Structure formats: C-alpha cells, structure tokens
Length: 77
Image 1 (tube, rainbow, N blue to C red):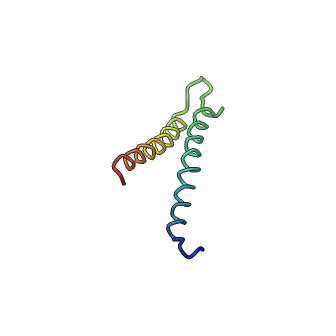
Image 2 (cartoon, rainbow, N blue to C red):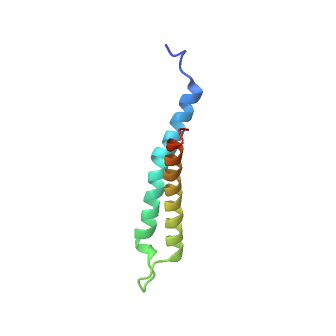
Image 3 (cartoon, helix red, strand yellow):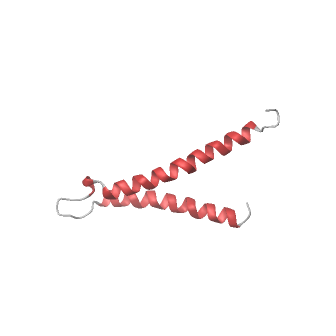
C-alpha cells in the first residue's frame, strides 16, 4: 500500500508547506509587532527608524513571496 508513495516528494511538499504556511504569516506578524510595539516610538512620539526598517524588510519578504507565487502559477510552472 505504501510502496507507491514517493517519500522524497512528500517530504519536499510538507517542508515547503510548513515554511510558506507558517513562516510567511509569522514574518508578517513580526512586521506588525515591530510597528506596534510600545518600544517602537521615541519619547517625542516619532517612530524609531530601526523598527520601521525591520518592518519594511519583513513586509518586503512576504510581498515578494506572494508575487513570486502568483508569477509561478500564471506561467504554468
């Protein structure tokens, strides 16, 4: 019954699913947290540049992964 299963391919699918399915939402949540954390503001009320840069980097990774997925699906790969 299990002789027909390609275990290598199954492992690749599971690992990519975990990275994309759990990793990208985690990066997005970290970006939101970087912007919303109480320590992300200076005492004068301005946002800290490091937090903003970190959030932008996280959002850029998520956006590029989403765009890459759309491109791969529309090209038929």
